[in-house]
Image (cartoon, rainbow, N blue to C red):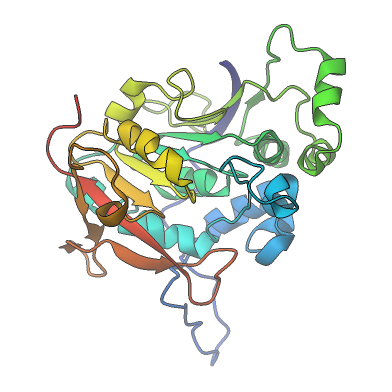
Length: 343
């Protein structure tokens, strides 16, 4: 993979940043639904600069929903299980997920001394969750986000490009084109894909087949303060080792798997996540307790960060605000790996 770099300054998100917008005198505090957590205002601001009005949008009007129409809508069964019907966590739902995984400030990742960790976001869609995790979870040194859909990947890259343009002092952008990628061939592949049209409108690079995106923290003086923090976007199938290597699964501190998986893919996905090390946290739409397909038992156990500081619970179900269930949320599951991963 050739690099698509996005570097940012350590001064952009300050510890004094508040978790909610200031209220006017006498105004009642806004009550969040039980499927939502507050999002730091500075994080929301950066997300809006990258994605504009699409941040917080619900229903079928999101960029990700319209970017890649699936043939199964008009001809059921013709997609062979690879359905591209789309939805994503809202920022408040993502904030709740990051807290349940113990990745935010004061979470168990810090208590365990797991700073410098790696998050794998498998099925990133348009990349909002990956960017929010990178901005909000300072315990993470690396976020690797993977998307199969070319149009949605294009939207993600275009959004980060727009963010770099909006914050030239905080971000440094570098795009390289994969060798042998012709413009005429690219035009033919992009023809008729609404997501690619959106990406071009936002200023995405033309060649996105094997593009990668990386974010690095930089000190205000221009030097690098400690090891760089990296956000990397990859387009491809995360079941393939040349897209996400076995070593990256074995080194993961957290995995987010928000996909509605077809039945014939469950075993293949479970073989890959079985490589995760002891202590790795997993956020998934599938309940592993009832949908485990491998003969060897899973080493993932129900677990989540509790609502009180320092409390960890042997529970895995909770509801999270999504674009298709913004008010009452959708049920996702959190687990934690206990013991040695699969050989």
